[in-house]
Image (tube, rainbow, N blue to C red; front, side):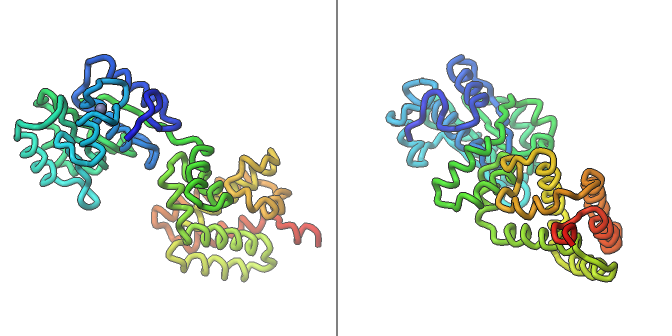
Length: 335
Ligand SMILES: [Zn+2]
């Protein structure tokens, strides 16, 4: 694998890359690191490159890709690399015990033995305590790299023994370019990149999922019907319909996204700031509405109440009546 010396081929991760390169150059390697940041921004790739560079015979800022050690990494056969992935929703104590056994075997190849732990925030309390014991007895030449999306969910005593490397969300443009190269349609990619909050893998999931696009359309239809309803009965029927859906809470989330777009469009008329630029005409048709900030707050409140299992049907009825009173669709304005 050829790796660019200065960037490691990780766009948008200059800070993290620089920190790791400085570590490699300094000769003072830590014995445990946490790589944290959104999914799909290159944490795992960085962990592999770091691990490879630690053992590269050229000892440069990036693995040379040619030496025996690098070639073994490229074929996935380097005996000094151990990777642990949560077997189910959590990382269990048995996996840590197994790791402990492996670490007890003294012989490995290369200067460093690296242990990459994926989903490290999913360690059970038991597994975390067992892992803490491993961290407390550093073995020379062994480097741990914990990968996590949510650093706040990591066991604090484990976190306090690790050096932190923060990975940022990817810029939208980078996500768009990467997904367009993969052959996904530009329009969908642009929307997904905005919704994915800097995560490439999340953006790809959105592009691939039929559900997301159907939800987006359904939620907009609901908003339009609600805004255009002329009797309370129609609103109550709509509320019952939304409430009967298993993805009811997702519809409410999408209401927030649409409201965001209507507000932004009304204030800036800048298509680039919209989550759904491909629906600009529909968004524009609502932009003469008033009291949108208050409405946004009401939707948030409804979402909160629904999460707390308060009577969701009733909360929805109240919300739809509110939407109807504030959101003015184009055709009603003209009549
Ligand atoms: Zn090498």
